[in-house]
Image (cartoon, rainbow, N blue to C red; front, side):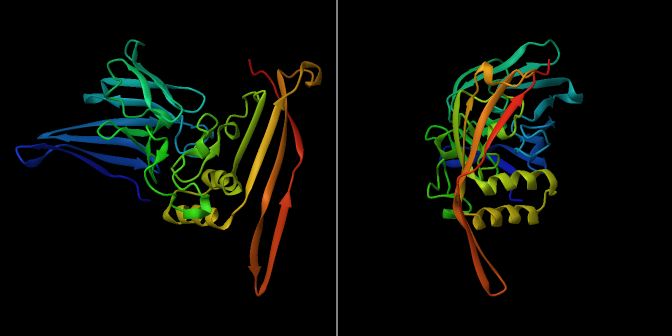
Length: 299
């Protein structure tokens, strides 16, 4: 699956490089479950416990917002719990022993840490987008690519090339407030995962239909090399987009018994081309239906 399995840190002194430490990574799918740290003759491990991510499945959103706890120390003597904002960014790390805040973070829109406090702030690697961040380089590891938060861009090209759009290094269409990218491969709209959230006063999203279909694959197709090839092939075959526009409805327009209602218009543009046997065909489309969505207060 192309996951990173080892990180080695070297120190340069007296004209030579010496190994300072190395870390080995053990995964369940794309989720890191154990980190083994080797420093000299000392070897320690810490473990990560995962639950449902923003997709309300185990890995449908790439684990974003799904890390529950870190178990550290001999015999699991230290346990930390993770708290998030609406986009699955780690905001606080809570020490299980006494309920104190072991780490607290604030970020700019592209993941740069603007505030970090607490005894565990530097030790905890999971921060923005619940991704593993390397303090040595300041980069976030997303699986397929590394994110540079200072630039707000990826360090490498889109793995699917121009099929993913002409902005080969852009991060979530420069809209990180409303969009996420689980693996550095394909962006998603956060509202697609959070069905109990009210629609903002106004919104507009653009994303690929391949991304919508990918959500279905994430839920029902097991992790495998074939699955990853399917996703890359899917994105390269579907070269069109969809836009979604919406607004909150006034109180008089809301359905009785619901705490909020919104109106969303789905539209699209582009075409699909394929060949069946020796007969080529194509479908072009534009526009779409209007849907009214209402949400009950679960309290």
